[in-house]
Image (cartoon, rainbow, N blue to C red; front, side, top):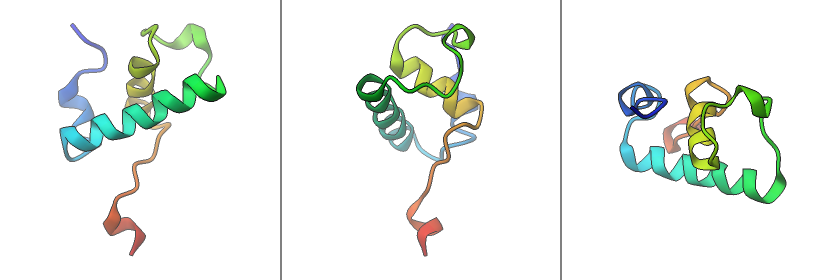
Amino acid sequence: MLYPSIDKLLTIVDSKYKLVHVASIRSKQMLENHHFQMNEQEYKNKKTIGRALEELDKGLIKVITHEDNE
């Protein structure tokens, strides 16, 4: 089973497409800057894309929508 579950993540982000977009941006940031928001031992996933989803699940990433900017 994948962690975190997509059903739980879709309560945070309103579409699968936005979820993929946010996770890919954060994953690239991790690869480029080697900056993690949690200790590396706390992550269950080894790959950055999974770690980005974990950060989103724990509320460490805030998703800003177009409606929030207005």
